[in-house]
Image (tube, rainbow, N blue to C red):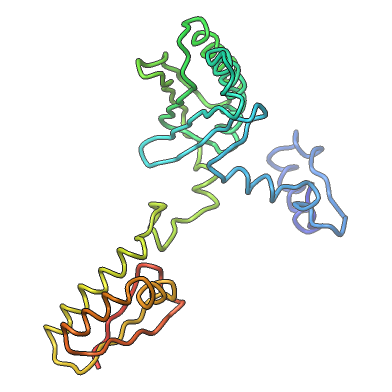
Amino acid sequence: HVDSRETYERMLRFAERFMPEVKSRIFYYPGERPIFSLYGVEEEIARALLPRVPLRSGGCLVIEQTEALVAIDVNSGTKSATKNLEETGFKTNLEAVQEIVHQIRLRNLGGIIIIDFIDMKQEEHRKRVLEALEQALARDHAHTEIVQFSPLGLVEMTRKRTRDTLARTLLASCPTCRGSGMVKSLETVCHEIFRELVAEARAYPCSALTVQAHPEVIRRMQGEEAAYVAQIERFLKKPIRFEPNPELAIDAFEVMLN
């Protein structure tokens, strides 16, 4: 379905010329409600970009993409507190197999994929989980290869990359954490500022110093770190002023001499 008349007509002309077999599957949507909203596409895309995927049993998958590989961790839910942990883990793993393959295709994950299933002691259970994984992947258009369970209980597989993953297509690296998913703590930033204040005051003559930093950092400096700020002022024999700047990243600051 296409909600733009102009785009719809262009697609029809393109299909008629290059892909006539799909022309009959192109439809124009004249409704007033946005088509992505009508079919819940935005919500589905948002869920497909989250690392955590819930399972009906109460467990979940945690999917982490790195430059080297994709790691998929299967976690059991509250039902894991039952007496038969082996049977619970086996059933959760079987359920997880279907969702893992669905997420691999949906997110277009490729390269090396490591799956950490819930631990199973029985060889028969491991064998059935692998068989289920192979059967589910048989419908995948991309070439895949599966390795047996490792001594650590991990399943290694490879999937041919056909195009960029959904995350690489729709997301960009965070400019603050530079894609690491971590930023410096407020305490770390404050102590970096303390060292910079001492270095600047010793290197250049001044009568006072001003610190520009994120408001959260300034609040920390004037709250929990206030005693240390006063100690540095006594040591340098110079007052220190603070100016909050919400446009600065949490770990960025500037020390100015007055």
